[in-house]
Length: 219
Image 1 (cartoon, rainbow, N blue to C red):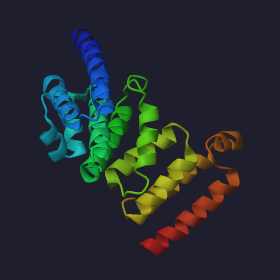
Image 2: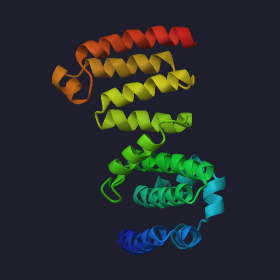
Image 3: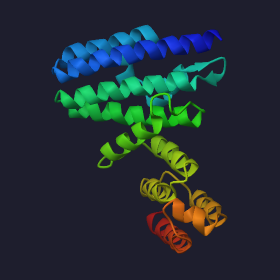
Image 4: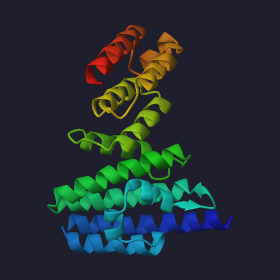
C-alpha cells in the first residue's frame, strides 16, 4: 500500500511538472525546462541529468530494482522523463545528446513493458511507436533491439518483429537458431492471426528461407 501511495504521488507530481515543462518549451526556455527535468530526477529518482547520460540503460534498469524485483511502473516513469529531456535537447539544438536520450528512453520503456508495467500509465505503446519512428535512421544497441523484438512479438506485430530480427542479424547479435525458433512460433499461428500481425503464411515461409540464406551470407 505504501509503495502504491508513493507511485500515485510521484505520478501526480510528474504530471504537474510536465505541464510546467510544456509551457517552458512553448516559450523556448530550454535551460529552465532542463532544470525542471533535473530537479525531478533528483527528487523522484535520486539521480541527475549527468548520471542519466553517463549510466547505461541496463544500469538504470537495475537502479529501479527493489527487493530483487524491478519496480516497472517507476521505471516507466523514468523513461517518460528521459524522453521529455530528449525532446528538449533536440528542440534546443543538441541533436547528439537528444538522440542518445531518446535511445535510452526507448530501452527503458521496453524494459518496463518486459517487467510488467501498466502500459497505460504514460501511454507506453504510443511512446514506443513515436520513439521507434524517430530513431529509424539510427543504429540501436543490440540489447535494445532484442527488447524491441520481444515487445513486437508480444503485441503481435509480426511484420515489425521480423524487421527487427533481420537488423539483429545484420549486427551479428542473434543466432541462427533464435531466428528459426521465431519462424517456428509464427508457423503455429492461424492465417488470420498472421494477417492481423502484418504477415501472410506465405510471407512467413519466404521469411524463414530468407533468414537462413541471409544468415549463411552474413555469418
